[in-house]
Length: 132
Image (spheres, rainbow, N blue to C red):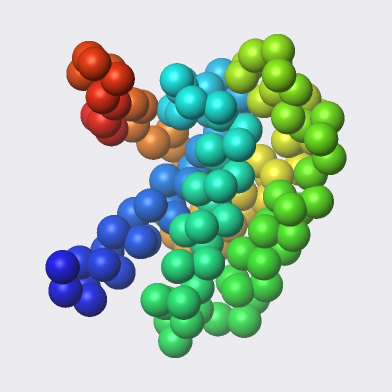
């Protein structure tokens, strides 16, 4: 894979991670189930935001970098109560997530990316899932 393809993939994955953070709880669950939605959502954002900043460092202004880092800090500071074990929908409906949704929506706007749910995963059988 050449650098252009890597960059395009990182941008796509970061955009999807940011979109998942920005959407309503039921849409977040649809986008990431069957996994542990709050954990996967945080891990995806943290991983791809770091990669995005590394690969696009010369193209990002200081304000955008600060917005990415601010959202990263908020995710890292989430209390354990944001990760209840009862259900994905119950977890995503907790009030701790709402400020992150707002920050993610603002960052999507700053990056001129659409505010829409990413495609969900589809079960292909035998434990194999892929994005639609």
